Length: 106
Image (cartoon, rainbow, N blue to C red; front, side, top):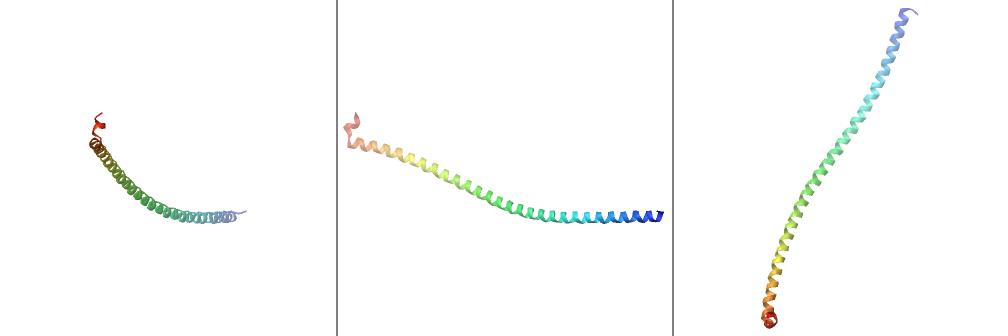
């Protein structure tokens, strides 16, 4: 094999290697394209999740506020019921003293 044939053989090998590399690069580019598409879908889903979380967070804050208002109202009603109960108890004693003055003195 003379030098020209050796050089031609080497060039053919290099050309074949370059074709293989181009094919591999093309496959890699295609895979990266699919990864980019999937990543885009994931980003869209994350955006939707973030919006839902914002909505839930706002709902929780409103619920916490409503529960606090209900608790405040409940406490206020309990205090008022206690005052009414004390007032009624004192009035009962006054009425009983008027109706049964002798029995109440004992």
